[in-house]
Image 1 (cartoon, one colour):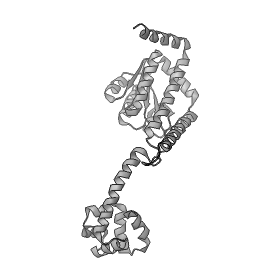
Image 2 (tube, one colour; image 1 turned 90 degrees about the vertical axis):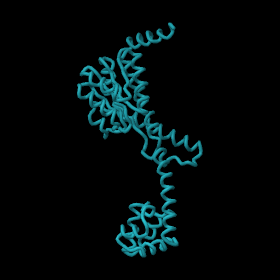
Image 3 (cartoon, helix red, strand yellow; image 1 turned 30 degrees about the vertical axis):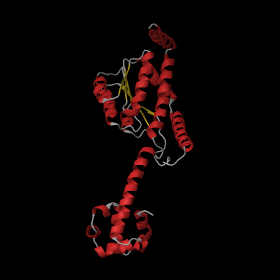
Image 4 (cartoon, helix red, strand yellow; image 1 turned 90 degrees about the horizontal axis):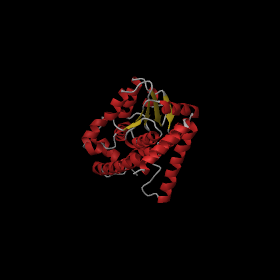
Length: 283
């Protein structure tokens, strides 16, 4: 049993002076690693003898043994926190490949289904019309979301849309500053608070472009400033890596927008696809 679990288990049996030491351990499990027995007693407002009695109540021979237990817990905690941060508690280091696949597939399917259920198709169709007729389309996205932004920009360019993907503020801010009311700016971000992406979208808003935020929730900084919001749902927070599943939802949204833009003017779409295909066959 870990040190903190022991403290919580025996808490009810502790007199007030000993409970103050327990409270210090609960608030800072690494305290024994940094403090002598006297230092821990002073922080708890009690005596070293009380700390020793607490050690024995918890089953340790003395303060040195408690410090060893604290060190083991901190090391284990660091490893556990690193795993939980990157992979969540739905995946265990000892899970079988089939279990990992099943959990990951379910998370991605949930994200895609949830995203599809929340689409406002009328609003998306209106956005497609705006994109088809706009003077310039800026797409702002960094890191993993940047892959989606670049993919969508490249596909829309084949339809004849003047589309540009910006994955850092050094190219995105100058471009945003040159937009106007005849332009569209789309920001793609799972959590919706990425500083560079938010800054580029804010600049586009300032210059009158129609702005769109594609994020995992309406309760995001980007959604708050955009003219239009599209939800690309990410899985529950305990399923990691959430950015991967969120990217599938973002790609679904990008694919849908691409097809809706293509439908706005089928004749123009057929012409631009034919012309761009010919550019490759001619070489």
